[in-house]
Image 1 (cartoon, rainbow, N blue to C red):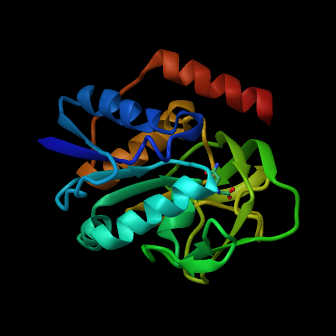
Image 2 (image 1 turned 45 degrees about the horizontal axis):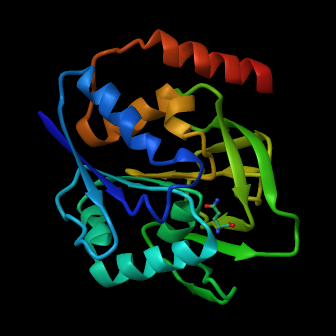
Length: 232
Ligand code: GLN
């Protein structure tokens, strides 16, 4: 089986190494003998409509607005997500896939609307530091990451968070962090999050390809466990 991973605008949305999420997915997919193709979408390029997994990272407000405008006018990501493609969106990317968010001037504007999530900027201090969450599903262990954002994101009533915050801020409402709705994953966790949490990487892969054989990567596991033990 082959898998197409589409990395969107990592030159705009690649703070804190979020582009590394693609490398982790490729590594863990190849370990399951999947043929993997990485499509690198740069500004001006059309977004492929038949990818299996789409990745968005974090970024500053200006590049975030630019990326959102391009994604709205292209339409490819919305098309693919409506057809069931998997999406993993981090921080600015998470805000972009929601229904509304501030633009680079602080005015609320429409997002892609892949999920019912609304981001605001309020007067609270920027959320910066380690983030630890207890995931709500998928038999995932405690997840860790690094957050750095001004925006706070309120999920719609039927929108399940990725997890509940044990320490840190996350979405900033009801101790929720991120979202996992259908095949759409969003999170404020950098790291890159899939390097720090191999089990989440497999959950993302499984949402695209279905059940997979076990794969133990001792280096990744030792690193993940060390982070969890240090932070909990
Ligand atoms: N600009 C957004 C915020 O500050 C996203 C930040 C980020 O992606 N690190 O909330």
